[in-house]
Length: 118
Image (cartoon, rainbow, N blue to C red; front, side, top):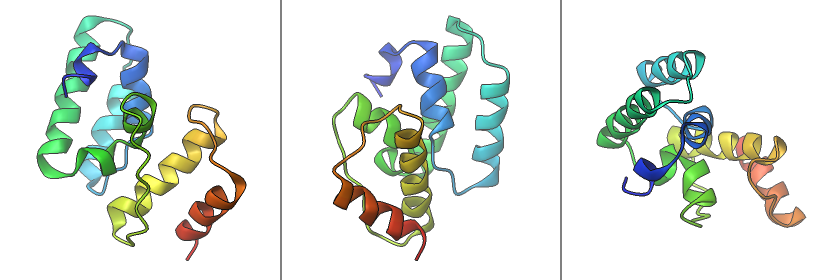
């Protein structure tokens, strides 16, 4: 969380946008924060509080693939069929398609794509 607390509001917004949420409450809160986005310290504080709330219930790496790959250089894409990992892979694919995360080699990307359609 130390790395996250140093990020600007735009980075935090993308963190929320590409977040993987298995609870509707977290998904709704994320969408609301994104809707109310302001590039200021108050919004950033609320976003960080939200990330901390999610991490109290779910694994940071699985919930927030965007900052893990972008900032921490952790590119762990689990093949686990658990809902959280499945949603994380979908969000990862979205981030790659939008150009916010680098695309891996074709074979790896095709494997990841296939893992969300099984």
